[in-house]
Image (cartoon, rainbow, N blue to C red; front, side, top):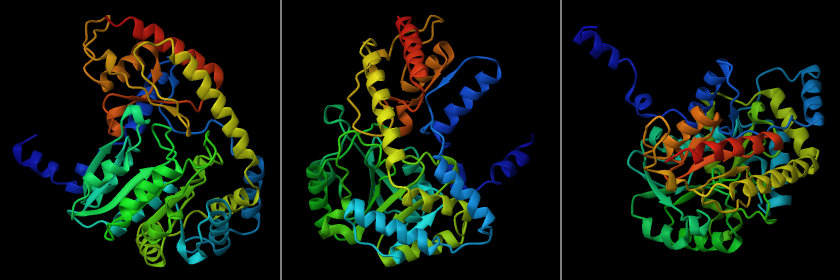
Length: 407
């Protein structure tokens, strides 16, 4: 290729897309699939996806929706009855008073997050991201030409950022805060007292909004789930994001939503109208059935997730180099693995960081997990516990064997 051809090739793509990073969870899953295609038995603990089937009553509602003619374009923010049901859910379960016009239904919670970031952040605005964070937060901020300011919670505090940390990080350019609870990747859950402290800080800075990602709300092992928007002083500056993928095992249906002031909801609707328009009509009818069917199916899944968490934690006790707090929710463990940095593989390669270790575990133990670098925590690795008990037992048996080989 000539110099001229190289220059032309490099200029085809926008700076925007060139700056974005590929999702590390998707990248690791791709590597795992490549090994599987070679006939290797890989246990994939890299994806954050329930291994349960969507409950039957939800699937039946989708079939009925097609027969009933729900096959046309739908309103951009979602069907009125679904948005009303979401508002009722928020009122009933979260003590949040929203109306239909405050709700925007999107193609998954990921789109709801992106709509909010793109609707609020101007170039140069600072966005404080609580870390460890979900992999797409920083990339969404980058897409909006904002500046990510990462706050890393300590292992000793279950990876949770404190109100004091937040206060120190705020500057005149701070526009937005993003966090999740229960947290992906750590499983940490903010208590009412901790969120009250954060709310007090936010209340002192009227230019700041907060995106509260509550997609793992139902997968909670400690009881109370607290929404930041419950604190009246800042309710109008909180965008609550949730959806159906985790609690109802509806990952492939792609239905999420946000709740916000009418102004912000209208802005997110405008953004969505120019990108995807409304969410799949049949998936919306299935989501409505999920809400109308209650939480019994979700509670059954949560009981299984709790059992799996406890099973994995018992096995992790046998892996001396893992330092792992007990997750309070979600379906991950997120150990600090820095004890293995500097060690050598049987082939003579040095484990310099968590990425090296994750690749070693995949190639030697045939267990796929995601480096903590993707989540803003470079000393850690994320393992999903959303797998059958026997798979989890075998995975961590393999990991111990592989890790014991490191010199």
